[in-house]
Image 1 (spheres, rainbow, N blue to C red):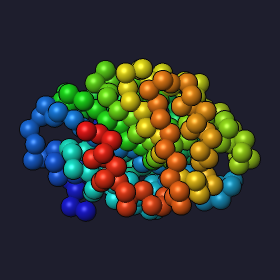
Image 2: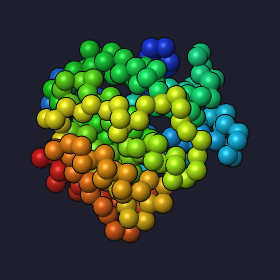
Image 3: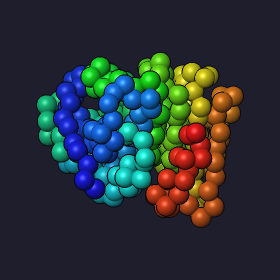
Image 4: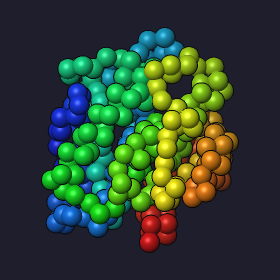
Amino acid sequence: YGFENQVQQGKPYLHRLILNSLPQKSRPPYEELHVYLDGDGTPFINSNIPSDDPTARQFLILDLLSKDKKPAILLGRPCYYGFHDSAGCQSSLWTSARYSQDVVNSLVFTLQQWLKIKPAMRLVFIGHSGGGTLATLFAAYFPQTSDLITIAGNLDIKAWCDYHGYTSLSDSLNPIENAHVPVAVKQLHLVGNNDQNVLAQFNEKFSQRYQNSHVFIFDGYNHTCCWADMWEKFLEHELK
């Protein structure tokens, strides 16, 4: 993709940041910065054995980043993107505690440090699947947040676990209970009607709690297809 990547020390975990070309060409402060978060990737080898490396084996989030015409970064989750064996990493951080307060705190700290060097007037958080979960949980930490966009976002992890018969994510925060998105933040939650992983009803139940929140259901789309195909036009239309 021709992206640049950087390593940033979080608190306490290491994070990889992947930048599209525009943060390098544009001088901060950026009028608008898009911050992407990837999904859960591969947390388990099978139902009982955690993966050694949870990093996603598909490239949807990079495809989305490549189609973004604004300055944009991918904020890597703790222990993802080559850091699965770095200090402090253990499998709970991509299994039961994948959306824990520790994970949220380290992501928030990492982005805060990056923004001290390259500030932005507005932040748009964009998360796919579990990345949408995390984006929803920490959008409130940044006063410059203007928009929150989730794609197949898991916004009610209890309902999701119950539906699939998964073990409860007991050490994680649940957006429907723990997210406190400011009312001024525009929320756009995108789901596919063929998504058998994250059901539209989970997003709709979450969205009902906010006046400035909207759910878009796309015919024929599933958990990963075909978001990249529509992404450039969607951003142009919705983020004017």
